[in-house]
Image (cartoon, rainbow, N blue to C red; front, side, top):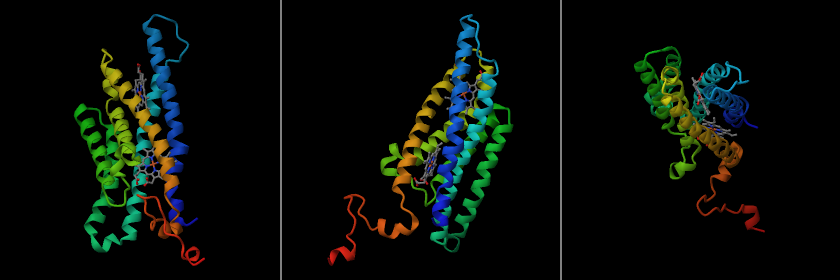
Length: 239
Ligand code: HEM
Ligand code: HEM
């Protein structure tokens, strides 16, 4: 396998080995947190440990970082492949500098989001982190599948990332709000996020199946993807 194909596997491997197991643990604690709260509310004695809420929050914070990191790895691969193939630094050096600055800027916004407390700054850094992902996502080289956006690994992935950023940004609201409104919002939003993650597992494996190895590219990209036909090799035409 050539280096470029191997590097293309870094993102799927990280998703399978780190992000999806983390989702499982976070959801397990989420269920325990909810059951414990409902049991306590109805006056029942609960066997669920009180630490489940804190553990859910701790690992949920990791999940936000892991999802944003995973998206940045995928985007870095797609964008750098395009920059290198088209020698973009000769044609548009400022665009290359802009892209190079956007990655650390997005990471810095997320780091600040973890550390700020006021509503305003959480809103600002959550918006900046999400904007960073979207701006990078619109660079050339990223396969967005615009004509089938509802089934696109890119759009579903960015949506899941934004919901994770939102979840991290509203943590203090969940704890402050005695009416549980933010808790309910959080639960609904993350049930949707869970469906999006499921979509990522399906669209990601589909994309892996569709992407040719780099030595196959010149042959595969001669195919007509609309009519689903490929040119017959010369050796078979003369037979
Ligand atoms: C797949 C992702 C997630 C799902 C399905 C999920 C679901 C839930 C559920 C069901 C609850 C309990 C609500 C209740 O008490 O009725 C909860 C609580 C909470 N979640 Fe999440 N969540 C997810 C991700 C996150 C993330 C990324 C964060 C960010 C740090 C987070 C932070 C919290 C916090 C702070 C609470 C309150 C915990 C407590 O009561 O001590 N969650 N979540
Ligand atoms: C948490 C789950 C995941 C998220 C948020 C996510 C997000 C993304 C994003 C934003 C891209 C860049 C778009 C692009 O260049 O096409 C991407 C690319 C890619 N992802 Fe994922 N991904 C996830 C899981 C997976 C899984 C489980 C696999 C496969 C096992 C996978 C395989 C791929 C592949 C092959 C690409 C590049 C191919 C393409 O252009 O579509 N991803 N991912």
